[in-house]
Image (cartoon, rainbow, N blue to C red; front, side, top):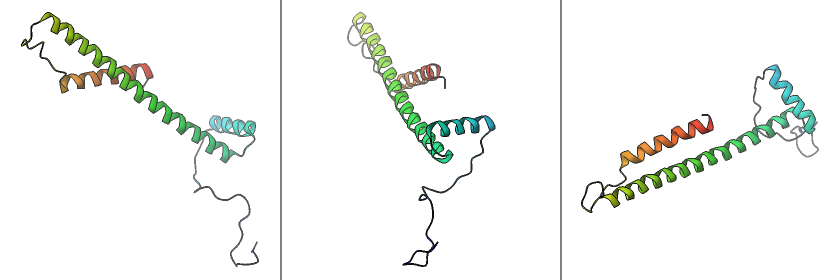
Length: 125
């Protein structure tokens, strides 16, 4: 169909959202997608866009939660290590190497590895 003012054809239908992609789905997943699209009253392509958007949003929130949990575990572990140092300091006089002990890079690395292991265990990674 040509418009009156130009010689370019007028496109029929909705405007293009982005490039088309090809995705192969197994019969079970395709059936689930079709049921979702039907129940939400939208075409299959719109259902795919909606579900992908929700999945990425969920993943973003999950990653943020994991980061917050990692920081909290690291903070709690660091507090526990410092509390142990304070207890040791009470038992020893100033000038004693244990009293002067600092939180070393190696200890921090060990704590971070422990936190990663705990995260993997708790979040099923």
